[in-house]
Image 1 (cartoon, helix red, strand yellow):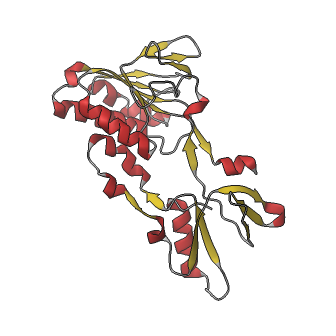
Image 2 (image 1 turned 60 degrees about the vertical axis):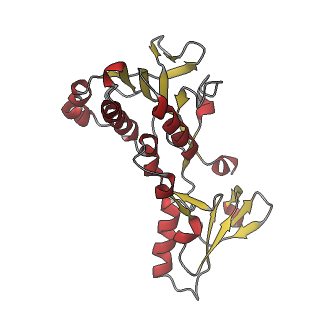
Image 3 (image 1 turned 120 degrees about the horizontal axis):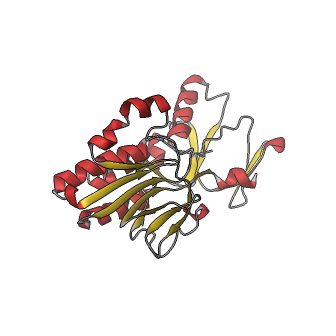
Length: 255
């Protein structure tokens, strides 16, 4: 289940190792498009184009492996069965779950308010990266806050990478002095590992990036353009680039 990076890797590895005559293999994914997710980080800055990161899912499925474009409704492990949204049932002897995770902005109060994709953005989705690219193209200055809502997330260092790329982007545009860049994290340091934060934390100061730590967001106050922490601290923004809560597949929850 899942035709992303993990699912396609497993399909290819297993097809090379298992005899076609002994096994029938099927990959199920909700989309017929395979997205190179690390490219979402570069799309907002114009470093990648959409054509660089989008392929057809079938292009990565090896010969001899079936592909079904469908959404999974539920899994019944006791009866060795997967039920699709259409009602179709797939029987299995071995099930590999590679459904990945998704962003869940609805989990944070106010995040999905009227300014979502206006001045509150994410880059962990294709639509989010597209909208942020348009926003950055016309951005002329102000308070830019890069925010991690909570851990764990896919690629924990990506928000920090985004912050450094933003610093370079604004310098190349000649507006860095007009931008206050702030990195907000629920961790006690900029990096996920304390040793890395101790050794490399100076990089933020060197680049004039403000660091706000131990910040667990209670809500996004879109009316007043500020992040609000459970302890009462507030971080104002003109542009908020957030990494929403990451959650697993709804099919797993339903199962």
